[in-house]
Length: 375
Image 1: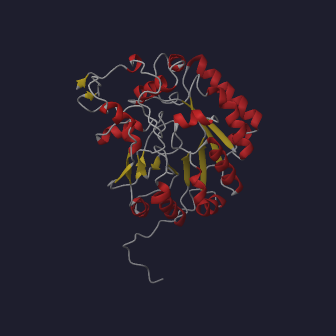
Image 2: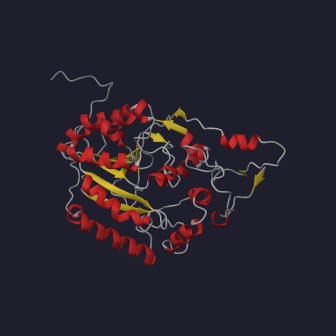
Image 3: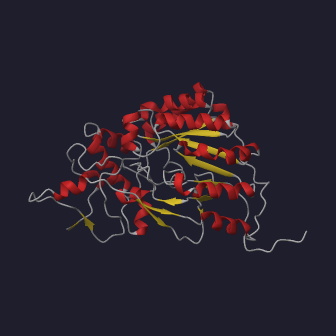
């Protein structure tokens, strides 16, 4: 049946873990914001089919993405790049807090379970990239790989689209920075290490928590915290500059781990660090509220209250400059704690002295259909 869209702050508390599925992050499959109605399943008590449906495992479906271009552009003043590549839409890691979830609404799908089970792969990403880099008007600047969804999510192990993109960038000596929470990035050290030696590659590894049970609930199909620290170690030993991202920081849930994450990552070889306060744009506010009340009903209101205290009374504000760090006394304390953690780990000087990747070595690729020169 069709019902009005509920207020994110007035979601009724469900029974503990009701609706939670093993290996999946979102508790529900709420309709996107562009849909005319929100549909809710309701059990009238006459049979058990609804309960059986909720318990049934969900399989991952991968569909082709037919985008005509692979480089996405942005003009955001608070991110250090203006172009990015996302080989996949949707992400099987299933992180319940993912700020990219609302993008599935543009496809007529749910930012909830659809986002982590209905995936789209850009199989021809490498071909499209080569053509865009070869275009007469292209000017080289850093490309961010994985700005929206993780380029090393589980299906990459089989499809290898991210690797194909890296091969094109390496052939052209084009600088690239990668953000991931997967140790699968180590598979591509044969490409990344030589690029890093030329000043053309860096990687940021997201470490949300060091608590295994919390990680399994927050990020059900992402590698465990120990594997992410191992990825930092492997990258550093291969000479690839690596940053740790303590992200997202969730008040009253994982914020107490900030210092430990920075210290452990620095010991593993990270040379820089960053953090991002939990962001809840669009439908993510509803989904995160459901998840909290399913998994942590005893502290759900405390988490949301402290988050509002860092967002001028709202669950989320999209203002440039503060959307990643928040405002107010809570946010200021978090920033001070982070700076102190950097100093203790010896990363404050490293962060301030880091060098940008080199754009001067770029060589335009020859289009695959072009005729080769005689000389």
